[in-house]
Amino acid sequence: MGWPVGHSLSPVLYKYWLRENATKGDYRLLEVSPDNLAAEITALAEKGFAGVNVTIPHKEAALAAILRRPANQVEETARRIGAVNAITVRPDGSLFARNTDGIGFIENLKSEVSGWRADAGPAVVLGAGGAARAVVAALIGGGAPEIRLANRTAARASQLVRELTVAPSGPGGGKIDVVAWDRRQDALRDAALLVNTTSLGMVGNPSLVLDLDGLPFEAVVNDIVYRPLETDLLKVARLRGNPVAGGLGMLIHQARPCFEEWFGGKAEITPGLIRALLAKLKG
Ligand code: ATR
Figure (tube, protein in one colour):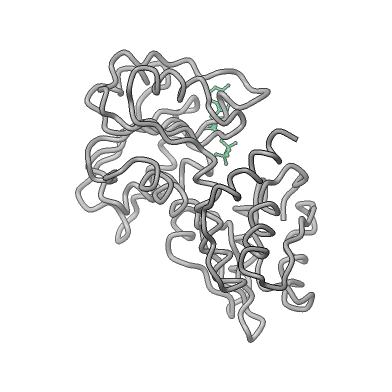
């Protein structure tokens, strides 16, 4: 469910895995306006869906809609992030909602950078939107000792920190500092990880202006943007020798637990899957 949703890569992913597993099933794009979101979510069971992914701009509103019915359940992480991306219809018709974006972020880094760990050192996160919330929550969960959060609108970064660090689910010892947007370069010093969660660098958007000079060469650089596949940030980082991870992997990894829950079978990442995704991205 999205609005608009036509450019989604998800049908390619799910249909590929359905074919690979010889599973009968379908994955459809549902163009749902904000006015109809709550009603469409309520109607999922009646329409025979096993589950649904929720994407822009519905992730926060879907959480509110789910919470309205006491029989429904929301996973703790999704509550903390304040957004859901996956809803499962349970046998009794009630709904279980979760957020697998953080899993996607972590699993992507683990598979792209051998030996990567969230607790390896300070992390710099650019952005404070929905994606940043999932990333920061995942880093906290993984034991990151320090997170430096820079966002154009500082108030949004401060709010993110307040909401994600409320006891008892706050970080165990790690700290989160809000860094002014025009000081983002200073935050790179002795960082172990740099993540861009903003839309800067995406096709049709302004580019991300950031001089990597102060960033250690061992620091992992991750851009969650995947259009283009290699953003300028990733290109510069790769050329200076930093380990890099692109955004397409996060999309794939957030979908894997959803496929396995809704359809059974294995959601494997194969060269064929990557080829199918690249073909869709080019088309
Ligand atoms: P998502 O849910 O995908 O994270 P979002 O909530 O719209 O999307 O967040 C987009 C992020 O990109 C925000 O951090 C936004 O900064 P603001 O909070 O200041 O809006 C950031 N962003 C978008 N355009 C930007 C620009 N031109 N310069 C700096 N940051 C930008």
